[in-house]
Length: 243
Image (cartoon, rainbow, N blue to C red; front, side):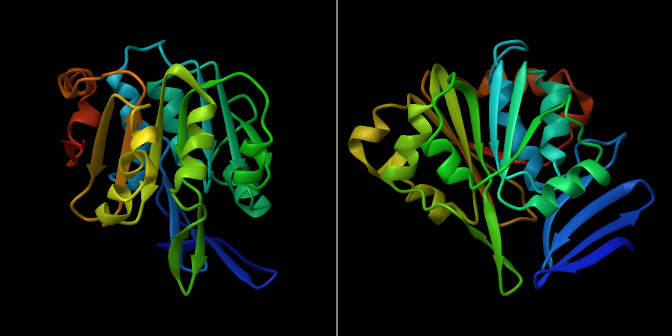
């Protein structure tokens, strides 16, 4: 891939690479986002961040909170396949937000882009509940991605606090072990708040994406909706129910 844009800012290296109309964002060597305007599904982890929304009919999910924007690829997916009324997208890194607009075609009409610490922002948030909250907050260390917030009782209960009665949380983790040790599975009181849970992953990535729902949902409904979208149904992902 050719380098479309690169810059070192305050000791952090940023690159936007391109191959044809495909664009990728790398921060300190960590691959954050990929976007193609005519092929929104790219076989990446961000595809899985949107997919749990398809457990529900179109129109059910009205308000979405995205914690961690990167290049904003998931915003395009949410706008196209979910069509919510509102997407609030929070990212600590102002360079990522600038890149999302300049190179990944994310506009103010698509999402409310906010430069802030996602943990602090949500802990101080006092607005309407969200139907879907995506925690995709990652930093970089030694060329590898690291989660920003531990999935402990304090953080998971904060996420739950801001969910609507039928809302759900999507968690991006680096592996299945990290996901299984999240407080929504290990803390008895918190676990009772959720009626269904699933793990989604891709064969070529170690990431495990978890989705925990306040109301029961069925895998057959997700499969049925996927079959209505040929581009989605071709994605080679794995889905399994978690206790």
